[in-house]
Image 1 (cartoon, rainbow, N blue to C red):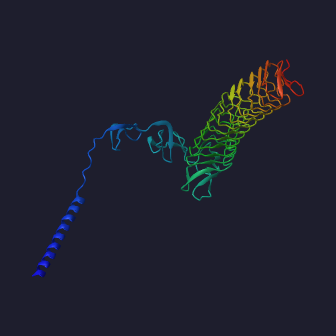
Image 2: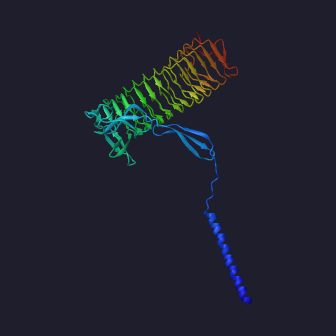
Image 3: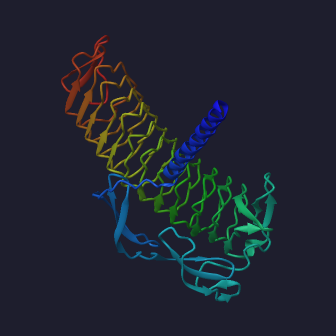
Amino acid sequence: MHKTRSSLRKKLFTMVSLLTALIICGSLFAACEKKEEPTQHDHSYTRDVVVEPTCAEQGYTEHFCECGASVKDTYTEATGHTFGNKLAFDEKNHWIAATCGHVDAHKEEQAHTLQDGVCTVCDYFDHETEGMVFLLNADGASYSVASAGKVTKYTKVNIPATYNGMPVTAIKAKAFFMRAGLTKIVIPEGVTRIGESAFDGCILADITLPSSLRIIGESAFNACSALTEVNLSEGVAEIAASSFAACDSLTSVHIPSTVKIIGANAFANCAKLEEVKLPDGLLKIEASAFFNCSRLTDIEVPDSVTKVGASAFYNCGFASVTLGDSVAKIEDNTFYNCGALTSVKIGSDVTAIGRGAFYGCSLLEEIALPDSVESIGENAFANCTKLKSVKIGALLANIGESAFSGCASVEEIDVAADNAYYTGAGGCIIDKQSKAVINGFAK
């Protein structure tokens, strides 16, 4: 009897335990299934951002709560694409190109109207590849124009963007050298390099340069005597030596902000060149870069320039010039015979004035050399016939022969009191050691 009761108690305990476990599990399962109600929050939109419409997308105002939530309202219509007057074209059609950067936006697209292979509306002509010689590049995936071949019978040449289904990316050296009958060239987008003397000696009056262009070789457009205007696109880093030298009709050049170097003789003997804006960030102006550009009446040398080469502005026509603190030396003949120059400001880090640097600047009335200048070369200021005032700093130690020859109008000489080598007296510069008078100031 005792055993039976004990057995019943055990069974009862087991059943109760199982029931309790089931209740607990059920409660836990219900808790897991129950979704926690989110905390109620009234948004407070305290920050507004106005997004302006673009040519393709709506504008709107977006309001932000500090919790990260946002809402948009006050929608404004897209402005629509903007178009200029320039015509773009392919092998079949021409259209007015968008100026908003969307190259796929076309306006007034029409098929070419061809007459003797030339479209009467746009620059396209269908004989662009006839007789032209192409060379497969080393990458095996692009071509270069190697030679003009038989296209010399045309006065206008339209270089194709592709050849044999591959892009044309370069024009080789001397490809169109001395093709005197060539008056117009259209270079397509995708071309990144123009080789040395590629168009040297052509009578080009009109060139279309692509925005993809990065490298212009030496003498690429040398002696293109009918060329009047050059617009270089962003991305070109250097204007190589003699690139546009002796372009007799050239009046205006746009130099992009990416150009760091203007090579030797780059625009030498461009006798009609009147307008050039040198970009901030330019580092070097090499020798004779603007040699004999006698109509160049306005020039600003950016503070970024560290070098101005010999004869860089020989016989130019501007009235004033400022050289920044980054230039260490004014090279030989830099401003030789700049007969219209009346004012010059020399940076505080210039240590030397080269031979003939300001020779024949006949309208220059005043020169103030910073304390950093240590030497003045031979004939540096010779024949500056209207020079009236000369200021010399403390470190000047050497004045070359005839440095001031022919400067008979000088009335005032100011030599720094602590200069160890020279002093000023009676309108003269006197060598302290030899007591010799520096020549050139006699009336």
